Length: 420
Image 1 (cartoon, one colour):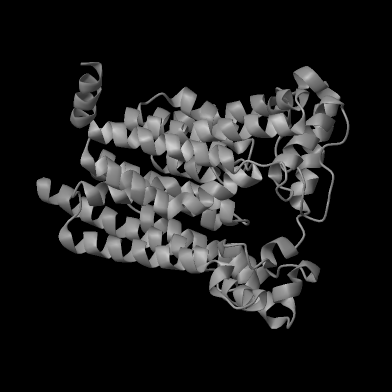
Image 2: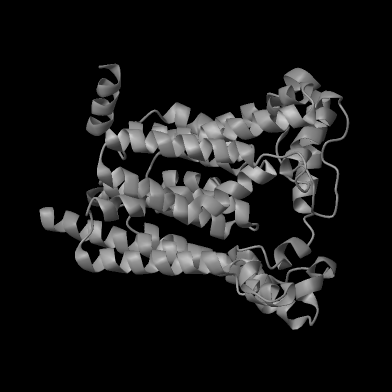
């Protein structure tokens, strides 16, 4: 009777059971790939810098753009409890925390009624989403990167803002800004949407979060850390922008106007020390303004304040944050989980008209092809692979996803107009 009861439960809840099984398998595999024998990654930087922070030693030490701690003193303080363990135990704790936060992203989407984990469409969404983003997730876990935490904080900001809990939205947004600056794009969006209360709270919380570590380090040392942090961020070496693995707009224009004219830049970009010229910054700024304005020109119009369109706006902010940011390497593309999720949701739940749905499918598949070909296994040697990377295939993947969101927003906006 007990076994028959279990079988009956599985038949009645096969969708939920299938998703739970997928999560268990995925969790086992993600834990399996955690290894202290990997190449040096970001976790090593967090661990070593937090040890230095606890010892009141220098934290923001220049190292030619690599293996540098470029986050706020608050993050060093909050990460520091892991340094009481040895590095291997700390690595497992950190990556397991990231796996939990990855699932918490979907819990927040569940709380927003965007996924129920009980309908057949939800299985399709989760499987397709894994196919589209698994490469970025695995890279984050392997390196012990911070982007899953940052993605969770940005989704948490979205969750609080949609529920009109503006103070807590500002706390989540400010904490994300203590890690990286590209969540500032959310703040610009809130100002466009007249969320001035949220913006004001964010400014206040930034001041508090910058001063909070002084409780441990003392006020004078905290100011020294903030100064060193600012100097380190300002002194980023040019080769970071010339890297063929960097998929941001700024890197693309750095390649187009400067790097490609150097015969050895593909294999020797690390030694390319020529600074960025004004035309690079001008082209970057104009492109960012065009992309942002084209998608959010209607953000001030109250009549298009429909929640479905709001979710697409947030999805685009995740893409803009990556494209506008000076550095956009493979592991940072884990943020595409959110825009891919909402595109897939509207496709699986038939939320778009036929024409725009087909456009979205075509653009997503084309982006997937670029993502797949962005791998050295398809090339005879490393040089040809880097020749391909110079054209920024992952940047074009993000642009194609941006266009898919644009088509989806056009479809929803037209349906909304026909309703009135």
